[in-house]
Length: 547
Image 1: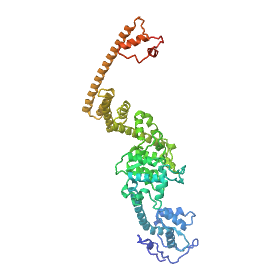
Image 2 (image 1 turned 180 degrees about the vertical axis):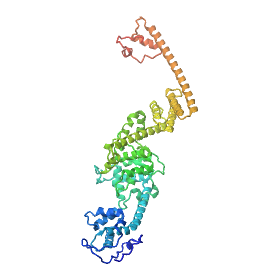
Image 3 (image 1 turned 60 degrees about the horizontal axis):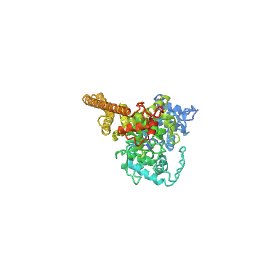
Image 4 (image 1 turned 90 degrees about the vertical axis):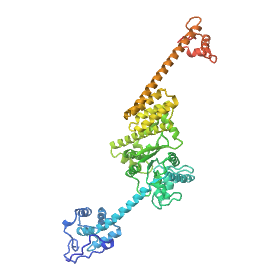
């Protein structure tokens, strides 16, 4: 039989490559299949991959692939075609028109499709890269964009909100009830982007939001961790109060997540955190921190610590002062709930998403424990840094604040610069409030000297140590003077007692007590002698002894 025309190694187009192949002249016919033999390379020239895929889908061991099996086999080899193309291709290589291909026919088909599929794959991959780059360039929004969303939410809150289908346990929002972060997703951003099937940030980037221009979006610099039930207005107020730089762009779920595509994966979120390099945790109620009950928030924090990204708290302006006061007055009690990570009880209102995060975090028992430990330790360190910055900024001149300053400075062992700044603030607060010669001042100076010595700055450390010695000597002199004053007062009291104990009984009556106090220029006219006796008369005898 005459050989069929050779197929060129790289077809110029799909149409040319898929043109019907001229069958070989009729030859001996197989009694089993009735197919005319086709010219093909010997079996040993057919690649292992082609044979492996062919036999994988030849489930009935017939030696041929049906139309459906050919499509599955081509998909397996990433030679994806539409149904119409598959039919045309199958007909082109089906010599007897029975709708099936032998191994040799399948091998020739793959040889023709590979260059076409390679071009298609490259084109598709290029489109995916462009789409990914466009998404990356528009996955962060400005504070101004958050404020615009907050204004829309305020207008939306005047009416009732719908019950969101697919959101676990979520009820309809009543009229005049403020929108949560989840409400904003359901009622504002998802409907607004339904036509374009993009995120709200992407909609801004393509000019689809009248009040916001493309400059309000960009690559994210911060990943904002917010529980779904947080009030949107409080979140925006907290971010505004943080006074972020104008060029900061935030990944914020209602604006930057595309709810029209596949669900967000933990790996995708972790990559976002790594690229952003900073995580902001919204904290509205530090005594019951809902962020630690949100699976996505916990995952974001864990990703921050794993990637070495910065982590900061953002608080609504109305709660920040109370939180900062609580850090000073009851530090341990304040941080206790903030480092209590209950991974097993964390959840998400979107059905299934909480489980996805938990599975990623607890791939095995040991890793789950490490996840919780990592987040708890990271939060503890973050709170220490936050508290130290508060103390540095405000120079809180109270004994509680000064003791906390020194305590935190010893806990900042991995942050020498911050520890030194904290000690210097402590020293400044001591001198402003208590004067230069106070025990708290001496302790602050000694701590700062120790810090400088550990850094090898011996000259500065020695200067401070001499200052500590001077303060200590002054304190000792002051203490000695106080002891002398107390001894003189005791002697004066003894002499007054003996003078007015006229009957030498070693006891003073109420009248004698008043006379003795008057002689010492201690006003007794405003006190009832009987009341004084009752208060200081230990044995109930109605008189007072010298002691």
